[in-house]
Length: 243
Length: 243
Image (cartoon, rainbow over all chains, first blue to last red; front, side, top):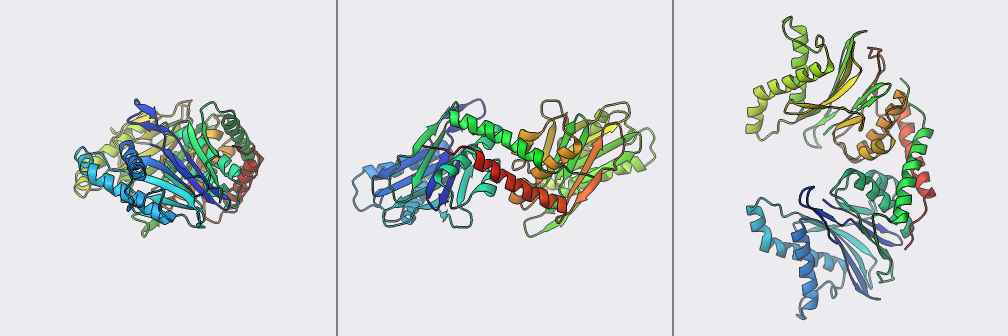
């Protein structure tokens, strides 16, 4: 499995992705699932992936090869003029991979399963965020629900539901996302540390606030421990049920 | 879907079950999923069910008919001498229903899906709790994980994980279970109020602490609201992430 979260806030975007891949509990590895493209001062594009690793890697590789190849008539992540166009490029890449690998995957009873959180900002637009599906179509995040989750989303959803506000500082949002990960990591072995994060401040067109949080990260350990203690204290303060 | 929880604590047992059944989001109903048999002063047996409603009802009906019919050579929920024997009777009833309906369900591409939390106490034993599967086999709750969940278990698990202690009072445990339900109800429409609960104190052999909690229950509303507030306050107290 996988767990990735994206938040679209007034001040910018926050992305987080775990790094565990598995083919059964006896076969786990660490792979990057948070991919970033940047043209300083002009655009930042981020893609977090869940699903079949061969499929997600093929999509990322296709998108990167298109950038590298000099076919000037083809739009790429680095030349598309809006994030909507970028979302269409990601969708097209998904469809291209499906065209190539879909039949063989189906024949071996594997699913063509993949889903992405795509976000970023291109100069001239506000930051935008999308969820791209295995069919290559997508939705855009609106104002009512300012976050997206892909992969193992259930354990970490209650805290996002209760605490997320569009006017949060990015550091606050990162704290929230890490708590959401903490709940997930405790319950699903197929989601694992380290966690890759990117905090993107609107109009900076920079990825400098990017970090990998390792298992023994002191902040994460303190946060996890502190949250458990505070939850238990909050619980104790609530009136007991009587019947 | 469904959400049911059972806790086996030092002081006794706590059961809770929602009452929503659905065949699609456009076809929901309210059905009791928490079933109780009692012989005052002698035994209390509780069964919470998840899965195909026709199957769970058939299992409950079979178990009840066996009690009513006077075949003295057949053990029933009311005559079995241990909770282990009771669990075997429930498993046998599941297999009997599968024998009758399994083929037709498979032919109509419906799953024979059912799972139970079984718990109770028979005089001469301590309280015990089991999870009974669709195959009719079962596991018993041990000391390491004092709770069972069936149905939509993920949203409500983080709070159970962090707060459950075997030495809780039953009223505290009921508060905890209701918070676990609150998280679940917010995220899965196929889990719905009212919630049926039973608090069973060891050696009372009585079901007097049984209650149905309706949508507008003042305690539940206060609990849900208070918990959200306290979570947000606890969150605000934790150090912000910096990068």
